[in-house]
Image (cartoon, rainbow, N blue to C red; front, side, top):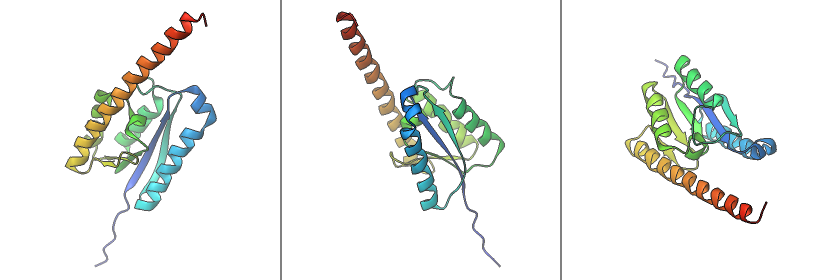
Amino acid sequence: MLNVEKIPTAVGYVRVSTDEQAREGYSLENQEWEIKRRCEIENWNLLKIFRDEGISGATINQRNGLKSMLSFIKNEKVDIVVIYKISRLSRKVVDVVNVAEFLEKNETRLYSIKDSIDTSTPVGKYFLVIASIFADMERENIIVQVKGGMSEKARRGE
């Protein structure tokens, strides 16, 4: 009897948060390259890469690329979602957890390249939450820094 192993299917998701980054294309292109490279190394069949350009990671409401990816997963059999880093998925813990639960219900695992997180393992699920907490903290720190910079510019009359 011939034992043919199924090649896992994957989709990728990339995001940059500023219009400037989106215009430059570097960050998106780098994320896409990393996703394609990981899929080749792991022998995953990359079906599609979904993109959100110039959209904040603070909320998922305006992220059409992410919404399209979730809809695609609901309608197609996808084994793995590959992302560059958890912060590219979202910088809010609740959003990361909600997406992870959606993926689990659809028998799709999440793989984060730079965070080395794979939700197919119990440890990976917990590390996902921990990494999302740090992404959320980083978002809060960015807000504080931007507000401080804006206040300083206002004091100088800029």
